[in-house]
Every structure is written in C-alpha cells, then in structure tokens.
Image 1 (cartoon, one colour):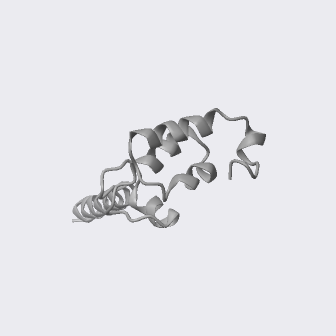
Image 2 (cartoon, one colour; image 1 turned 60 degrees about the horizontal axis):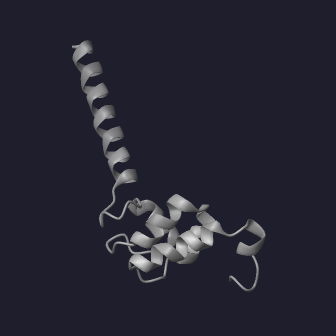
Length: 97
C-alpha cells in the first residue's frame, strides 16, 4: 500500500513538472520566442515576430528589443545585421537611435 502511494505521488510530481516545463517553453505562434518571454517583451504570443527572434540571436536582449515593432521582410534582417556590425559606442549614439 505504501509503495503504491509513493509511486502515485512520484507520477503526480512528474506530470506537474512536465506541465510546468511545457508551459514555460510553449511558443503558440512558432516564431521561436516562448510565450512567457513575449508577454515580458510586450509582444503578442499569437502573432509571429520573426524579426525580433532573429535580432535576439544576433544581439543582446536589450538591443534586440529595439526591433520588436518593425514589420518583417527579408530586408529587415539586413537592418539587424547592419546594426549588429556597428561598434558598441555607435549603437548607443543619437544618430543610430
């Protein structure tokens, strides 16, 4: 009886932890940014933001967020690449921002 209760408790812990991991990593729109981070960034977790996902791979998070409201097309990636190629002091200048 006691072994059965322990087994049931372990199964429940496994199920609950699996649900938590699933929720933390869920990406409803398939853009590569987890829903939980999209809420943190103020973007819509149900609307893909491929440019922000691309920028997050190339830049520090605080800089990538500058691109969260830019409409995506292929030339937008070039804008992120150009920005990423700038020296740090230029990225923070008034001319760039």
